Structures are given as structure tokens and as C-alpha cells.
Length: 104
Image (cartoon, rainbow, N blue to C red; front, side, top):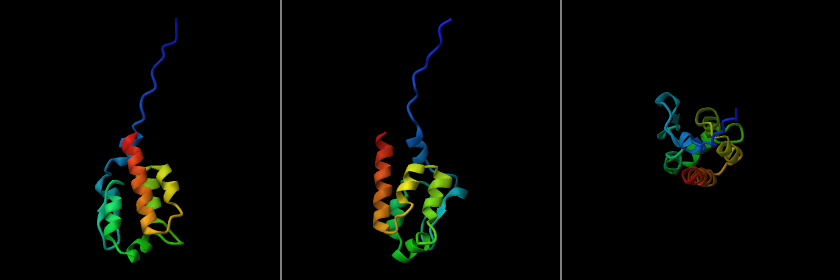
């Protein structure tokens, strides 16, 4: 009997990574907005001060990296932003990744 072959299914990771998370998994920016998906992250970061950004991203920690890795699950974006310390560079990397995911 011949083997049954199936077509590879298109990846649905883009949709998954762009989806909103449950409220209890949202990212609470210190003195700022609550983020429930990476689409909202750039706008939220544009609204916060450099001090607030530095509270979450500094030489000792990167809270956004942790959230993206552990909650969102987007390892590619996590690798890109792991060492980023500039708010503008961070926003640019997230926007670039969103564009990639939306076009895939």
C-alpha cells in the first residue's frame, strides 16, 4: 500500500506571536500602560519615559526579553532585543518583527 503524503501546512506562528495573551499574562509597564501583545508594545514604549524604560531594560535585567521569551514565545524577537539598551532601537526591532510576522 503506498504511503499517504500530506502537504506541509503553512506556519501559523505569526498569528500566534501577534495574538493577545490572557490578562494575567499581560506586561505591566512600571507607571505605564499594560501590554497584552507585541503589536501594542511599540506604542506603549513610545508613551513611557526613558527612566521607565531603563527600569525594565538595563545591565542587570531585560523584563521585555523575559516576557517575550516566556509568555509570547517568539524566540527570534527575543534574540534581537536581548542586548538592546536604547528605547528607540528596541521599538525599531519590535516594529520590524511585527512587519515580518504580518507579511508571513
